[in-house]
Length: 243
Image 1 (tube, rainbow, N blue to C red):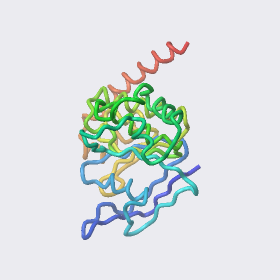
Image 2 (spheres, one colour):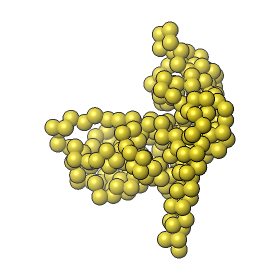
Image 3 (spheres, rainbow, N blue to C red):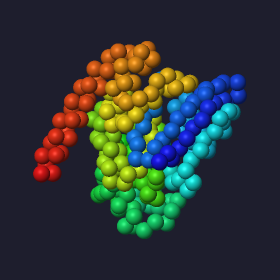
């Protein structure tokens, strides 16, 4: 089932056209990653999907009643403000404590409920933002460079958690990322954007596409292969542990 359909989408800010004639679909249960250089229109595409940016041409259609969870790039919290993780999760919806705990568990940080937001590490903070996006059991999870500022192991762990979320909930995931070598292996499909769709397909297809290599260099293919090996190795161990 198709959840989101973007047709001939263009977005401009004043005289500056940031997206031109973009066609895109997101299917149920799919993990799709959008990659592209700075200024390529990645965030503008997400903003158009959630209705925060007005298309100059084209349209965005979503399945009726579609629930979207959004994980922002970053969120600034006043360091002098005492607020627990639980209170933060309940700022917009007075959900029961049990629901907060379930969301934190799904985000891989079950023990943070009573902690202060200002005392969290960068990785923990991003997991709490993920939990907040999961509170209302979304059909689609949108992530805008959600691992910015995390180191490579932290980013890899975060994306493994995203894969686990998809496995547990069946929700679709659309993410923007700059972590090329990490994120590609977590995706069913990759879209390379640079004001328009340069190329798209499975991670292996995109990594070998001339348009992708022109933007990011040939070395990223090797990094992808390296991460894939580590990733598969990790899954082998998980399988052994499960048995």
